[in-house]
Amino acid sequence: MAERPAPPPPAAPPTVLRCGPYALDRERIAAFAAALGDPHPAYTDPAAARALGHPDTLAPPTYLATLAAHAEDQLLSGWDDITTEGAVHRSQALRHARPAHAGDTLHATVRLAGATTLADRRLLTVECAFHDADGLWVATTTSSLLCPAAVPRPGRRPLDPTGSEHP
Image 1 (tube, rainbow, N blue to C red):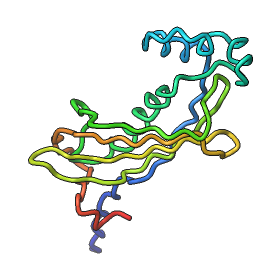
Image 2: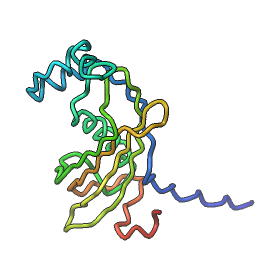
Image 3: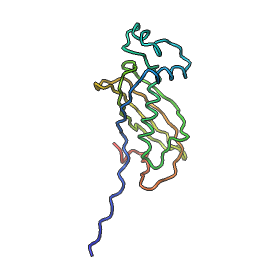
Image 4: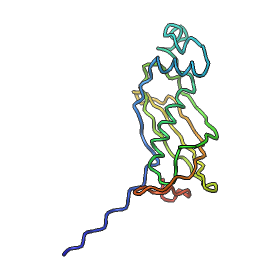
């Protein structure tokens, strides 16, 4: 009776992931601006935005941070010892090439740029670059997250904070 080969080990979760598409629409942009308490008419009125030289309603500069958080969750969900539940944002930076507008369809490339262990927590640096439908860079967010330890789950691999198994 022939022996069966051992199953391969689970693949390492990605350290880079492409996410989207994210279709930006007027209603969500207006709701975000209202949640911020920012009454600028360019966030809610296409005519006001066009008068300022924009093709449609303008997304507040921090709007893409909400999309980045979604992309970060997708990237980090594959790691055994990381959870974003209960995570604390230590810092966030945004660099814009151009404003985002209603009607834009964006894709995000999210990357785990760094990881350090602090006691039973992970200090992560995550970059999320947004590009439009033409592939042109729109903005990049860089987040520093302090994540609690996760309960290991079968079939998932722990993060190697030394980066030895990651590019």
